[in-house]
Image 1 (cartoon, rainbow, N blue to C red):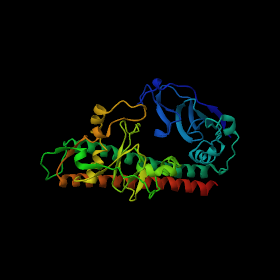
Image 2 (image 1 turned 180 degrees about the vertical axis):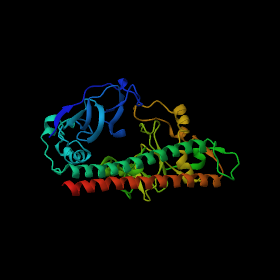
Image 3 (image 1 turned 135 degrees about the vertical axis):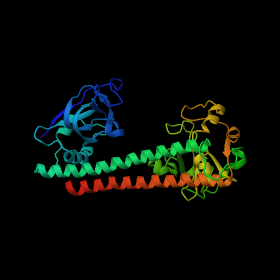
Length: 364
């Protein structure tokens, strides 16, 4: 049914970010972002085909590529001259291919293995075409929602910058902002889990906030026998994680919004706010304005993946302090924006679940 082949090596430096008359053809790689779109190139290798990632974390991911395109060598390519290259076939293969991925060492799904996969497809090209159009509509809806989420997140970042720099203010608030040290509006939490009263261990993720450690790592990292040395973290307590990541170049500060009490490693700095709106303070830490203070006053750590700063210095971090009324207005505004993003994310997740359910019912 298909001829099995592979893409060719192409350096990212040879591609163009924007499509143009000089570089009109899309280049697909193994990355998941933008459906694997790496850029654009002056030439093409294939004209409508199905690709799959041959190795790495995304091994077995199958995609339908309509029109002329270039594929790098991390992708295998399926070509049919009998009309079998369509969206429906790629979706069926995407259901099956992951089952054949080898996990001995680096995950792999090589050409000879892919070529031997058997799938059940409708004999009628008309039915295949209808299924292709149906799944294309679902994918378009998914893409639209992903773009809306990205735009909302960009909007939030723009508002964070403008509001906390006082470039943009809410009507009725004209008073100047004060500046207070973190120690003036918070207390360091030093209460430890001495009686092993709490057993749930939290972690502080730059991307997801404070969550259950098992949910984040898929396993328990902490040793239950040593939890008596962990700090007790109550609802609305703030936690600074010194671990550096792409999401948090000096480490994240997040608020415990789980609605329950847990414990955290003494490697974290836990503090409890007072005399300040909690939502306002939470969203201030979503900005990068406070990063400057840490970079100027942090110590060079022994580990490159952790940011080192003394507690006594961390406590001196300056916090912009408008009136409580303005703090509440700012906190409420960003909370509503976050809820809008969350609702849109729920809709996106539902679309993905629906697509998977349709595939399961139609082809398995």
